[in-house]
Amino acid sequence: MNLFKKKNYIILDRRAESPQAQTPDRDAPAVPDGMWVKCSHCKKLIYKKEMGPYHICPNCGGHFRLGARERIALIADEGTFEEMDASLRAKNPMGYPNYDKIIAKAQQKSGLIDGVVSGTCQIGTIPIVLAVMDGNFMMGSMGSVVGEKITRAIEFATSHRLPLVIFTVSGGARMQEGIISLMQMAKTSAALSRHSQAGLLYISVITDPTTGGVSASFASLGDIILAEPGALMGFAGQRVIEGTINEKLPEGFQRAEFQLEHGFVDKIVPRPELKDTLVRLLRLHQPEEVAEHE
Amino acid sequence: MNKAAEVLAASRKVSRPTTLEFIDRLCEEFIELHGDRYFADDPAMVGGIGRFCGRPVTLIGVQKGHTTEENIRRNFGSPNPEGYRKQLRLMKQAEKFHRPVITFINTSGAYCGIGAEERGQGEAIARCLFETATLKTPVISIFIGEGGSGGALALACGDRVWMLQNGMYAVLSPEGFASILWRSPTRAAEAAELMKITAPDLLKNGVIEKLIPEPREGLDRNLDFTTNILKEELKKELDILCAMDPDQLLEERYARFRKYGDFQEDESEKI
Image (cartoon, rainbow over all chains, first blue to last red; front, side, top):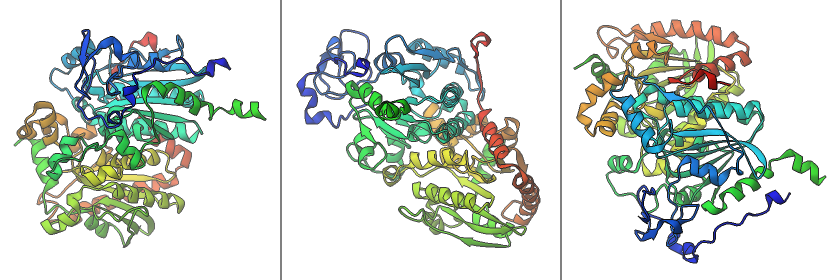
């Protein structure tokens, strides 16, 4: 049972808990190469190593975006992640000009074959199915590969009676695949419907940003929906809304705190507490643990 | 103008018959029901119970107007979250009373506004996709005009998806597509062609099952031409779907959406 004991997390600068950490206002933060990076939340120059494994600004507590592999390393018990469907690659259903080149470029940039990594793992020794999207690959857009891998992950969870955790980050449907990318929303949601009917737990974790077709499908369908602080979540992009209503959007619009206030997120969890929170939630859904207490 | 751009223009024509006109021609009687029971009634989404060829059915659809005034009231056929929650409520009601559902799609997309986001536009659409997948009653969807993005998909997750000759269905409006990918909204006609938005294209790639013809003189001039065909087809299809074992119906509905995807993988890695 010691495995469930709280782990030693890195200790963050106390300033990370300052009020401005609650409502970071910034554009896409990503960690570029080099020793020093500018925090896109507080604009301070910070020494890269000071961000620690959680990629959090030591000055303002703003969460930098994480790649899928880095995320899995933080969430899965060491050495337990087994990837599935790793070889799925995009084709070109709409005949979009140079789509193969666009894909090749994204693969080079991200080191991934497409926008999601899925597999099985243990977290706090509990076996789960885990799918993690990656914003470095065409902004995590959902085309056939993302839709198929997510669907297969859900179906695997259903047939093996496993809980499912999906980390979302996405600009929405992959435009270059046209209507087929829209169909991935229906496909993933239908698979989740069956997972739910089987009485199984699905936790979605919203990371920055989760918009469009992913917000209008599996991101919003968790039995429990967690979000990282400041993560943007919404159906329509901010520029689209500004264009439609012809006015500036209010501060903090569509951020995790806004979604919590409006009832669309269960809990905002800072990255260092995420694994622990997931383990606690999963344990509360383990039938064996109920038996142990009787 | 290319063929796709012509279809796009026809699908958006202000005089194009709306959902309520289709319901009126198809049904012997219809009682409209209102509200999502949580927040409001969305005039952009209409629904109710009707009698179709003697059979009680639930009819739901996006409603546009023919005049500016009417269109303002109908929000130009862009539903808010309460519209999708009304749709879901009526679908659940249909399931309870074993009525088949017919949906009519004619929207450029779900509304993009502050209120829509505050009330969870994404969640409202996602919930429709999720619930329709396991709804224990037949659902037939008909694209009567525009079909844009998730706001159209929310109504099109059933057993059969049909489209009128000048209907269209796309991941995003061709203008939006051109502006996102090419930063040039003026290339909409080119985008429309590339995106394969027309009924014959969608029939070919299996996104729809049936194309319903329109009269040469225009749908607005002779709606009966199309509704007479539609009536025959709907009657035939409802007889088939209503006679099906419910488990089989849901199996086939799942398979209908499960098949979409265009990808490759190494055979050796398949489980």
